Length: 303
Image (tube, rainbow, N blue to C red; front, top):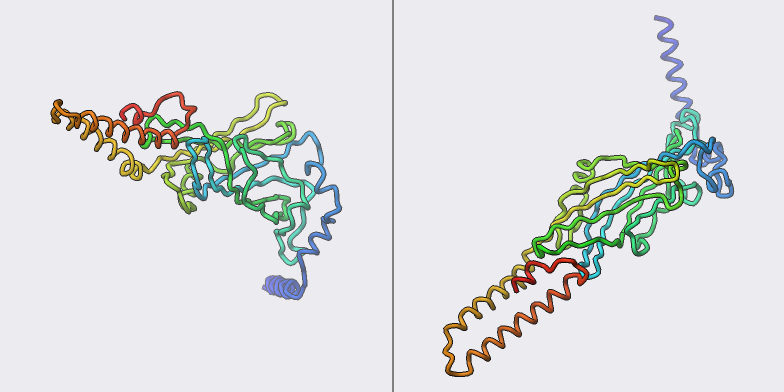
C-alpha cells in the first residue's frame, strides 16, 4: 500500500512539474536544427539510405465542379489534396517538450515530392498552402486546395443526357519507383462518400462517383500512377426547355405544313421559315459541342 502511495505522489509531482515547464514550438525546431538554411531538410529526399524509396500517400477529394467546357474539352474541378510522407531525419520525444507532438512550419523549409497531374493544361489558380505539418514520428503532411484546368475527352453522342468521365492522373515529375512510391490513402467508396459530403457546387452536372486506380510500375525505371476518375451526369432540364422542346415544336409545324394548300406560295414560305429556324438551332448546338467528336450527337441527327 505504501508503494502505491509513493507512485501516486511521484505521478502528481511529475504532472505538476510538467505544468510548470514552459515549452515552445521553437524548442522543437532548435532540437532538430530545423532552419531555413539547413540543406539537410530541403535539398534531397529525406532518407538516410538512398536505396530506400520515399513512400508517399495521396488523398484527393472533390469540392466542386466549377465548369465543363465541351467545346474546348476542358474539365475544371476544385479539389482538396492531402500528401503524406516520412522524413527520416525528424523525430523527438513529446515528453521532453511538454507533450508537443506536431509542429506547423513554412512549406519551403522541407523537401516535398514533385507530384504533377498529367491532364493539367494550366497552372493552379488557387494559392498554395503556406504551411506544412510534421509530427514527432517524422510524418510530414501538406494540404492544398487546387483549382485544376485539365483536359478531358468528351463523349457527347447522347447529349444532353450524357455521362462524362474525366481523369486526374497523379505521378512524380522526375522520380522513378527507385526513389518514390506513390499510392492512394483511401478507396473509391470512401473518396466518393467524402466528396459528396464536401461538395459545394456542381455547376450543371450531377456528381455520381469517384473511382481510384493505382498503377504500379513493373520495372525500376518506371513510375507509379494514381488515377482518379470523376464520373458526372449532365442535368438536362435546361437543354430540354431551350433546345429539345423548340425542335419538337418546329417538327410539329413542319408536319402541319402538309395541311396547307399547294395552290399559293404560303406553303413554300412556311417551309423555308421552319428550315431557317432549325438551322439556327443547329448552329447553336455546334457552338456548344466539340467539333473533334468522332460521332454526331443523336440530337443533331434528329434535328
